[in-house]
Length: 245
Image 1 (cartoon, rainbow, N blue to C red):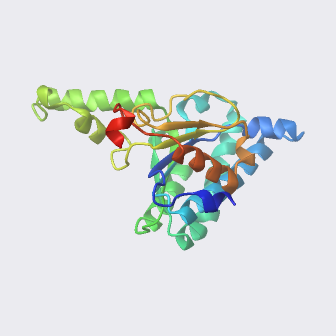
Image 2 (cartoon, rainbow, N blue to C red):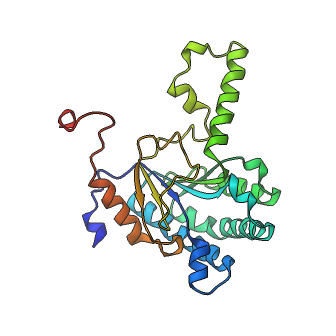
């Protein structure tokens, strides 16, 4: 029923999701944390396919933050192994759904086998023209912005970029997301109401949607509800309602 209410002409071009609550879901089910991460991977599959079915152009998932490296080593190792397993398992499904995979973050910090698997799937889906799925891995927005400042500063110092020419376009060109549009809709699950160092520059005018659902509980219907909420909002970008009409 929710799908029938969605206006396919005004879909958000870029949806970003903070996938939170795997551990709490496992705890509520009386299971170990790894079972929560496995259930979370299944939720990823459902949501990616739902986004592709709708025709969402860009979907970015916060899969592993720079802060996540501080978790217990065995949990990090489990997450990395699950990532490799998921990439291998989902390649055929991504191909059949015309999904193009990308990744952002400090990817060189990932284990070599993860980097290799990630690179392989990115290469094999490079010509797909449907939903562009981006995984934020070893990602932190402050680190991203810091790296952009460093790169721009070097170019100014070497007279490649005049300091007076630095604008939003120049900054965008030096971010991990240089090939992506700004985020229209940011979703966070699990009832937490914070951004957690995710796409701080890119969500400047995003609509924020928070749900109490834990990530393994989030599905196609949940995505539809978030989009319906987005479509009910008036996006003014600093203008008045009268100017928009």
